Length: 317
Ligand code: BDR
Ligand code: CA
Image 1 (tube, rainbow, N blue to C red):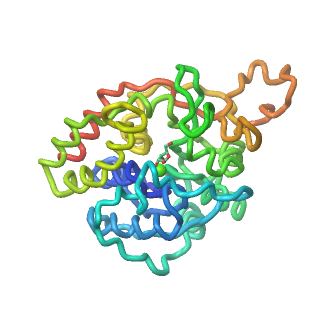
Image 2: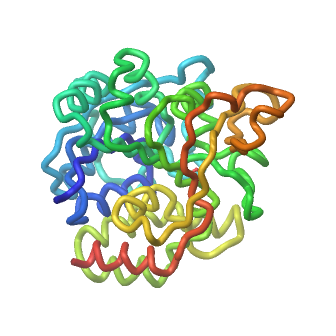
């Protein structure tokens, strides 16, 4: 049976790819898209979610979420990475979304209505999830699992993407992310350690574009991302980031994970860093921040080619 998923997102070029991937996957039953600020303002990401829902033919609703982090200022939309409309400045007319129902209420009500059945996938700032757990702590025990795209352990030499140690989704609301990590629920972190190793090549983009309207749309949207990586980061192709969270749902055997308590630095030069402690040593650490923090899983390696094959097969099915 397909896994019931609430997809929390800030579309976003790679978010658009991940939404299409989840929509096409037989393993995923998309219950709703909940939006968060990040790649664009909340108004923009919500408008983009509605646009994608219509373009991709999703039969679930869009719910509008938080417009700002819990405790810090919004660090501003990532225009240089995703374009001024956060969907690659393709020139498509993306109408304002108007009033969409509230994301946090939707998350709480859905999880309570279907205990142990609903998976939360979060591929933007974790603000909505944190607000949901603050408002309804009981849902932590009622979700099936939580899969996030965010963070980086750095254990395989991959650095952060917005500071030397921080990944954008975590840096953008570190307090929310830390609350996610301290909550007692089964959470898997799909971070830069694996997403930076899974690269969408120009050739694959072209194959998708030739295959279907959906592929052509994703290629058009992705062209901005492609240019950013080529011109700014001097590399061909781009990491699929958010799609890896979907790939993890579909094929966890393609990932290797490491278990341990994870905390997020919420201030200073290390703000947004995701730091896994070693439970066997936690009692002897000079700081007690990792004590009594329930273990999480973090992906530390991926069979990247197999994930790309899965992405292509699913999108071309
Ligand atoms: C993450 O940040 C966002 O820009 C992307 O959509 C992805 O979720 C990568 O660090
Ligand atoms: Ca995202």
